[in-house]
Amino acid sequence: MQFFISDPATSAFSADGLRDYFEYRDLGVKQATDGRAVAHIIRARGGHRAGGEWHQHAVQFQIYYVLKGWITFEYEGRGVVTAKEGSCVHQPPGIRHREIEHSADLELLEVVLPGDFTTVMA
Image (cartoon, rainbow, N blue to C red):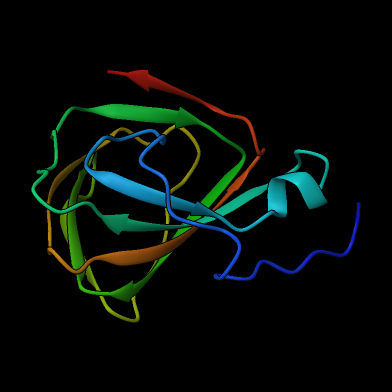
């Protein structure tokens, strides 16, 4: 593992992530931890709406912290949950969920272990 600092001036957002309605800014954690974890900032991509498909992630750990705006998910066994600015959500490994909607100004920090994980449509 190595020391690493992510600078917003040198790490741009990219639309090459899991969902086409988001942009992702890699924070360098995956490289710094030899793939043990990944951390990125996710923000809403203008003109794109959530897909709403049920899915689950093969992970050991996953949290997200809403920096700006809000996001609404439906979780199997928990129902509909809206996380707003300042909310931190732990999604247990394998929980089935789907995004329903998000604000146009949404920004969140997501941390996942391991750095490479699979998403299965359910």
